Image (tube, rainbow, N blue to C red):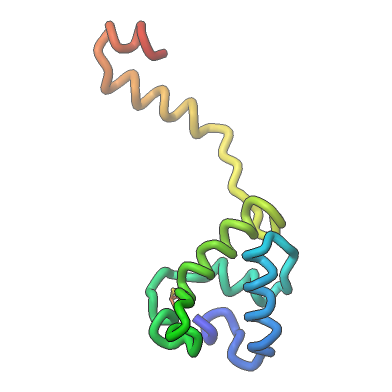
Length: 105
Ligand code: SF4
C-alpha cells in the first residue's frame, strides 16, 4: 500500500501520529487519511508492527481511524446515493408476498 498511494518517501512518524490523532477523533494529516482510506484489510501490519508485543493490533487501529475519518473528522467524504432506498423498495417488491408488502411497505 505505501507504494500504491505514494507514501514510501513520506514521514512515517507524522503519518502514524496522525493515526493516533484520528483514533481520538482529531484531524489528521492528508497522508494518514490516504493510508486509512487505502487499507485493504490484509492484516500484514499486525505482524509487522513493532508494538504488537505490547498488544497493539495495527489493523484494528487503522480500522478505527478510518471510521473516525468518515464519521467524526469527515476527512473521508461519505457516499450519498439518493437512489439507494428506492432501489431497495423495488427489490423488495419483487421478493415479498402481497401480505408482506402490505405490512412492510
Ligand atoms: S491491514 Fe494493515 S497492512 Fe493491510 S492494507 Fe491495511 S494498514 Fe496496510
